[in-house]
Length: 370
Ligand code: SAM
Image 1 (cartoon, rainbow, N blue to C red):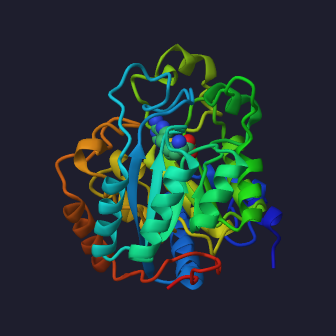
Image 2: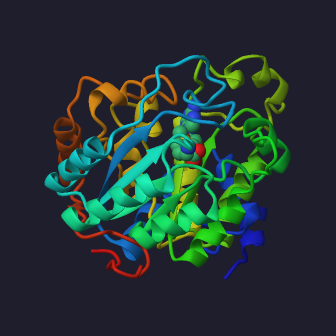
């Protein structure tokens, strides 16, 4: 059998046992026939390793306060004056009940990095959601101290999402500045959270200014190296109120031959390759993908490796204020309408709705995939 290197010599990147060179070759592949083989293989691997079930996670955007100055994010502290909100305990519980009522197995409590969401405030909510709904709980609130993380794990939180955003340390510092007096190291936090018993999830944006083909290839390789349980990959969508949509973009952009574009095709290639190198991980078809291509983005993600969707159950009056990039909010649609569109799509694809918590591992107190 020819080695990966032999096949690359013949100009055909391999689809199995990918190495960095093959990932890099696939990322820049433009031949439609070959790409069909990549899509087909990613779908096969998805089916063989995680099955046809699509797991639904109800996303609750609990706060848009943020102390971070991420230069890409429309709710960061450097995104100009914005109306800010923090949901109350009752509002969060009502949204969690709604997620349960819609048949989802997990709620994701996401928000800016907000010290106003104290460890105890959230621990009390985690306990209440667990007691009342039994749902799996994913937290995604940025970089928090180990004491807060342990408190949330002890209260019953099952998973934590923290995208490392890029493996290029110089680029990371430009898009994700340190807070005064501390050095941001998201990978270190992820590994500590795994020790605490969380399932851990990470991810990157595709096409962020300064992201080269090599960087994106290294990011995908890092997902595999760190054996991530969940991996979110979406296109970078510029928010006009952020520094990265201004002069910083020109400063960071790589030369055109090296810069990754923030388009759907490249995002789908990154998603499919991630499925090939992380066959049994949970991978969402992201909201950003469906914002870029409202008619087919979500479907394309599900057909090219994804097995999770995260319908938004944030109350519409808050959803509109959680605009990390333009066009995200879907403010005119109720949570029920959003969910029913997702359920229809899953059925039309001949897939099934995931039942149970839909985790990757056997987390204490939770089953694995239902
Ligand atoms: N504050 C938490 C954190 O930083 O992990 C969670 C919320 S943050 C808004 C969630 C993710 O949104 C980020 O990790 C980032 O990858 C993504 N994001 C932020 N701004 C974006 C943009 N302009 N385009 C695409 N994705 C974006």
